Image 1: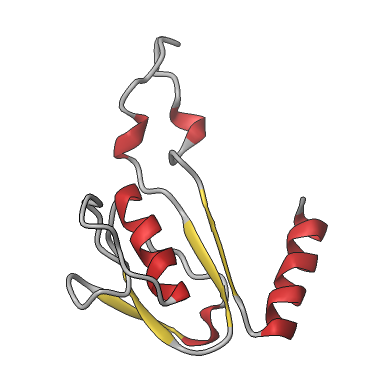
Image 2: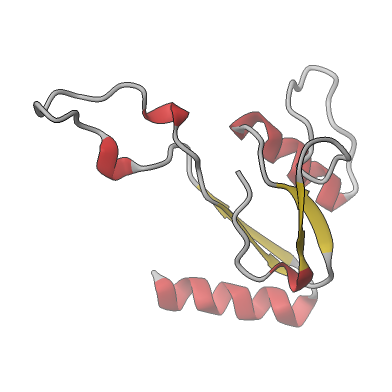
Length: 108
């Protein structure tokens, strides 16, 4: 997987694109409590959001999964649908961190 991801990253660099990698839940190792029972609150843990690509942008350090689609739309220069509840991670709200050249930066 790492080699394949490296190939994709190299392709994005060559075309000036942006690669976004995320997951639908964080901390998979925390799926059981100390008694071995299923831990159903795994959605409260931070989910990595890795961005790689050309240019320097600022992204919020906090967000929700609902913010990912609006972020992708903004990167593509497309409008967000009015039905969408999320806000782009590049939207000027919240706490920001500079991600120069977007090299493996975690956001959410």
